[in-house]
Length: 410
Image (cartoon, rainbow, N blue to C red; front, side, top):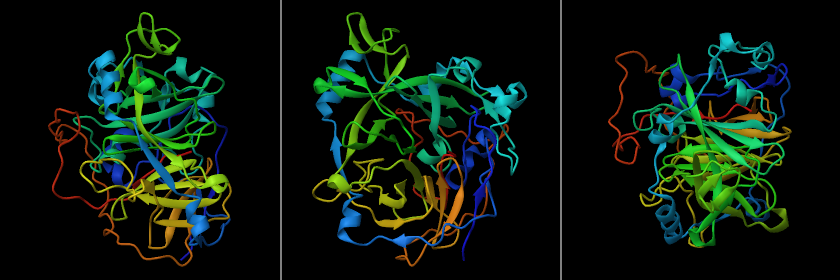
């Protein structure tokens, strides 16, 4: 079967947008900003073309580079014990506005069809700041399929500085749908063996939180295509200066109270033909779970590692390379985040700021979990709140429920 899609959107604004489906069902009532589908019937970009040649697949390979443990420990020793997501949420100092308090321009950014069931707008100071633009969304429904991280339901929103080379993440506490609060953390990269750090100088067009790792896309400047952050290694700053890194008075992160130092990266290894991913999504329908990437009119996915010692990292071969398990070419332009969904052979693609379903051509069958029986809403006094573990992550479970994908709306 083929699926067709055309997206209609009004003028862009700064309303918070997220697509929360499948794996993010635990967040359904608290944080569904936009309905899961924003497509209407329209043009069909055609079947996807499988990429199977060594040169095509080689252009998509990534080489893993992990920060030495001693470097991370040195930084933590100098800055103080790292904190987890729960500590960051407790210090939230901004509040998202309810739809009733959004401006006319902000409301005009909402989808025309179907209409949003819930909508929130950023704090007026952040919304009016021309220096920053929100670019990506991921949730605790990606991190853990029941939608919880410790005792919280969380949304992460990645923002890019329009002029200065900075990237930041909003940590949104989505426990109470009537009052969403948030605070900021700056993304950084350790330097000098963990004795200092500098800002992540890049736009972040894609972002996925899986288990205890946050993976973000990077653009230009270096061969690094993805940076990896540990959600249990968030550092507090001691100085609210505009500088980034170690300063005479202590540690600074452009005025933000928290900084995430990268724990690793995935570098392009395909020479001049290498394709840099620009969109990321999580696919829980594959076994193991996989990271779906897109860019340059290509769609591909990397399996996540099943090694308990490597939570949230991509599976790599003996040479430290992450090799795509599936890859396709598409005629859809500006492809953003995408995920395999629906009947076998169908992927949902979100080109740029649109949403479109595209049909796969012949493809290698993959082991799939059975489809989800439908959403389960966790709200009200009877909502289950798992006991948080010492690290802030929900304790592991022996079984896994079937799920779909949770992807950002571009």
